[in-house]
Image 1 (tube, protein in one colour):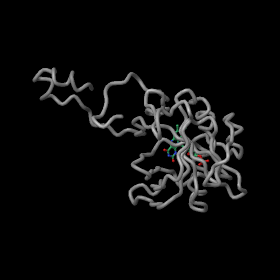
Image 2: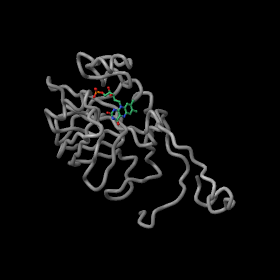
Image 3: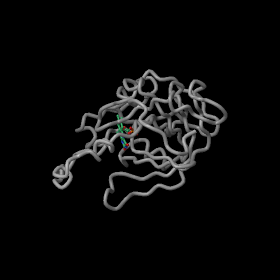
Length: 214
Ligand SMILES: Cc1cc2nc3c(=O)[nH]c(=O)nc-3n(C[C@H](O)[C@H](O)[C@H](O)COP(=O)(O)O)c2cc1C
């Protein structure tokens, strides 16, 4: 709903609720996709596609299923990299979609069609790049890479199958093509991959600017 259109709506439309109350099976309402690098027991890097995250300052929060390898790895080794693919990379992300680094595959995930994969970089055709401050490797193709360390892991009582993971950003790497001026990302050049109810989107047209936009 566009706010300008909303102000033009008829009085009748405004008093009649235009919503239905639903019980959606998924609530992925459109957030950027990230590929989380974590450290496996053997020192190799696992990649987990995620879309549940937010960032404020140097604090980032991730929503992670506790049956995943990413969660297991973070509990053992607190370092990770948040790699942000751009919209053009959706096929590489989706090529990891049915994989887990957990072996054996938990029964519940096996029934959903998940398979084990130890070589996620290879499976996705992505290139491993050394990190500066952490052990898990970065994904060279991702225009934004955030080396991070876990601060807290919490399992909400009402959803014991997932964990809220708070991480601190240690080092941010931005592809040169995105940088405009010192320490600034040009939003016109950054096109995040958006996960919108399990469909991949890029960004649409610029709609406006915040009063603090630079
Ligand atoms: C685009 C995309 C977004 C996803 N978002 C999440 C998420 O936010 N949290 C989560 O736990 N799993 C999410 N998943 C599912 C995980 O990727 C899946 O459980 C995978 O097996 C995790 O890999 P791992 O077990 O090797 O960590 C998402 C999958 C895709 C393809």
